[in-house]
Amino acid sequence: MELDSLYQEVILEHYKRPQNKGLLPNQTVQVHHVNTSCGDEITLNLKMINGTIAEISWDGVGCSISQASTSVVSELLKGKDSAAALAIIDTFQAMLQSKGSDLGDESVLEDGVAFAGVAKFPARVKCALLGWMATKDAISQSLALTSNVKKEQR
Amino acid sequence: MSHFDVSAVQADFPILKRLIRGNNRLVYLDSGATSQKPISVLDAEREFYTQHNAAAHRGAHQLAEEATEIFEAARGKVAAFIGAKVDEVVFTKSATESINLVAYSFGNADLGTKFHIKAGDRIVVSEMEHHANLIPWQELAKRTGAELVWLSVTDDGRLDLSNAERIINAKTKVVALTHQSNVLGTINPINEIAKYVRNVGALFVLDACQSVPHYAVDVKELDVDFIAFSGHKMLGPTGVGVLWGKQELLDEMPPFLTGGSMIETVTMESASYLPAPKRFEAGVPNMAQAVGLGAAVDYLNRIGMEKIHQHEVELTKACIERLSQIPQLKIVGPTDMELRGGVVSFTLDGIHPHDLGQALDQYGIAVRTGHHCAWPLMKKYRVVATTRASLYLYNDLADVEALVTGVERARDYFLGR
Image (cartoon, rainbow over the protein chains, first blue to last red):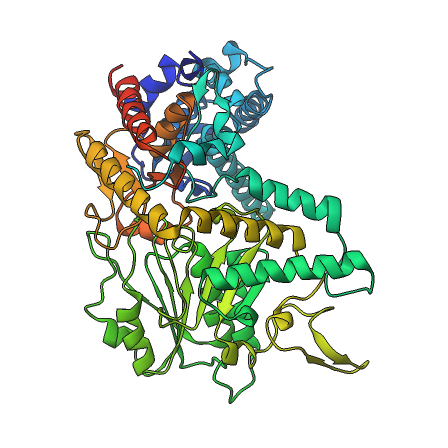
């Protein structure tokens, strides 16, 4: 059934038991993202240590797709450096915007490939991207912070 | 349920024969967003283009004459439908534009006129407004320095009028309210509220998008100054909306959009303007859409607004009763039929509306999910979003049953795993 291709078991698992949900203190950057079409909102804390993602914690309300996908990204990118993390986010985004032709590389995206089916439901692509775009924004902001600090030190 | 022959009505709407996501019958429960169109409306638009197309109010040729006549006849039909004088009906592109027209016109009004809004004045709205009847007033308040104040809603989905006299005070210049909430289904007691508005001499603007399509609305009985509604929610085409305003007000108001068709005389330095409705219809009008709306009015009249209303009341009652039997389900809005229309919003414990809507779609059931362009109301009821079923004349009990079964199936799909 087509509904199952959207709601993979992995997605419902993450929805029921979201990882890293609950904001942790001492973040490098906090971002707040909203899906304007449905009202889903997340707040995400990113903690960087020496250019590496030490922690992603988040809180928010939304549908199973947005909650599960935020859970997945918060696990997947932990321990990655900024460049690697941004590359993985781009891969995920490309899969979702492929209208179903790109099934995703499990060695890169891990649980993230479960969202390949979302690409066939255009109205839900934004849901799946919410947490990922928030993370991308947070990483970009943290990079800007670092470069500002460097400029000041010069 | 024999107010009229619903199956004959259904046969007039070609789209209702479509199969959805495979082999499912379309159960269309999203008329609050936009209604489906009967073949007579499509034919009227097509006939306008195939037989009479020309720019109305211009040119001396036969087609221009016919286009003008048919376009103005549509205005006459709409005016009769709401009990208005024909020159009080302004065609816009949407109800959103109608409300913006009023807000911008007030914003353009000269000091000393009754429409002029300034710092210290008050604009009153309510917490249950659609964004279309909220943001234009927020913006007007911002531009003029006026204060935006609102009536709140009660826990059972009614307007809280306990402090209406304090809210609608002597400083109040405009009160803009919805006739029926697009989320809760609540019908507001307009003439009761009008007393407060009249007491302070304010102008009363009514968003009638969810009322005019569903029951008889007569502007002579409603003590308001302006009403706005859209064509596409009442079986008509998209791209046409209506603003009704009292003649003496419209004739004094400054224009909103300016250009051709709305002028009396023009020099290089200045222009004078025609009276309403033309003053507010700059440019070649949306003729085919207005003609389609005229055909929609004919269709609704043929069935009868009273019968349509009775039909919807019975369906809504059944819908609320049946949905309420689902233990995890909560209706957001009044559960009695007193002053209530055919819009039923609900939440289901443990399932986000987006997911519920997705599952229902797989079964062929079209509902609206989200914040329904009423974000403040969602926050008030502490919900992220709701699922909304909205009913119309072509819906029947089988649609209500399909919804109930669909919700139960979706619940089992998500919670049973």
